Length: 194
Image (cartoon, rainbow, N blue to C red):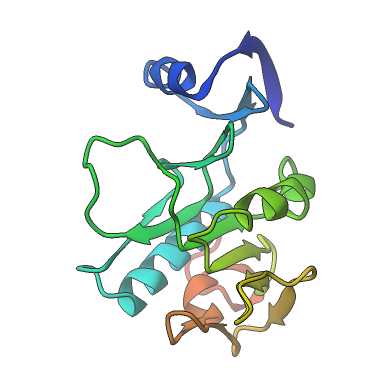
C-alpha cells in the first residue's frame, strides 16, 4: 500500500526534499506518497521494456530509462516505471514534462491508479504518444496511443501473448512482448527459484 506522509510541498520543494531520501516517493496533489519496493518480476519486466525500447529507438534521438527519472504532470510528480524522451536535455535535470512513451508495470499498490488517475494525467501531456500498462503476472499489456486526430482513445487496446507485439505507430516500430516478458511466468527458463 502507498503510504502518505504528513508533509505538503510544491514541486520545487519536493525535488529538494526527495534528493536527500532513499526509497520511492511521488508528489500527488501537494502530498508526498511513499511507494513500496517492487518484486523481481516487476523489475524484470521494466528491464525488458528498457532493453527492447533501447534496441528499437535510435539512441542519438531518444533516451529510455527506468523509474528513477520523474515526469511532471501539472502539480504532480510521478515516477513511471519506464520513461522515453528526446535525447539531450539538461544532464542535471530531475524531471521531464515531455515524455513520448510512459510505461507502468502493475503492482498491488498501484493497479487502481495506473488505470484511472495516471491515464488522465499522462494522456494530458501534449508530447505523449503512448501510455502502456503491463501485467506483472503474464504477457498482457494495455496500450493507449494518440490517434491521428490528436486524441487518445477512452479505452486501451489489450495486447496479450508472448507472440504479440505492441505496434508503436508514431515511431513505426513493433515492441515484442517475448523480449519484455523474457523470464516471466510459464515460459521462464533458468534455475529453480531464479
